[in-house]
Length: 246
Image (cartoon, rainbow, N blue to C red):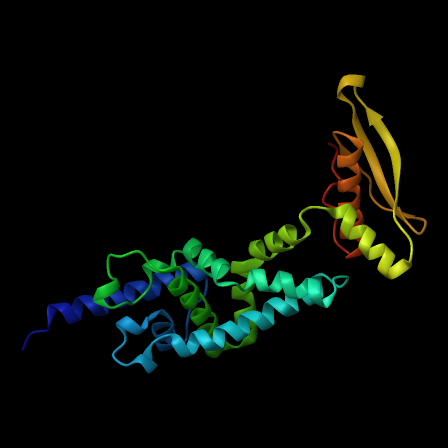
């Protein structure tokens, strides 16, 4: 009795996909069947309950929890509404699909013949990423899921925060100071250099008598924005992003 070549090919292909996926997410599964379920689209499952749909349901909630916790801890001065808007960007299907594509997870998917050789829909890429999060959680717990999300999503969280603020650090600092201290920040000229036609300026933000790390800019407005960015970072206990010489 000989093996069915098509069945042998499918088994080898699945094993290769498991190895590829684990290498790309930086995690080794104890229970490889969890990974098999996470990578299996309904079109490639013998029964729909064996597909990644249930894992996607769980992974969506785990992703939301960990991103919320991350934002809560890193941005203590943001209000609930601000955190909600940033979180909705990070956990959106668009961002999850983007992360999934960046990891190359479409090459790891187990799909039916109808999807082979066709472009992978964004929704499918998003679902498999959330399914893998759930599979990691079930395999070894919340800390492993958190490490995976931090590994995959740190850049997207930063981008979402930057996109939400629009880089308007002065407006954010003004809002924060008014809310918490009842005043307004003051911007101080520290230094200027260069010829009249090409001067650069160094400004510092001062809040309630506390002066923060100054920043250089090509004009006073740019220097004030950067100085506000330094102040916001230091108020959060972070290193000022514009401390270096211009």
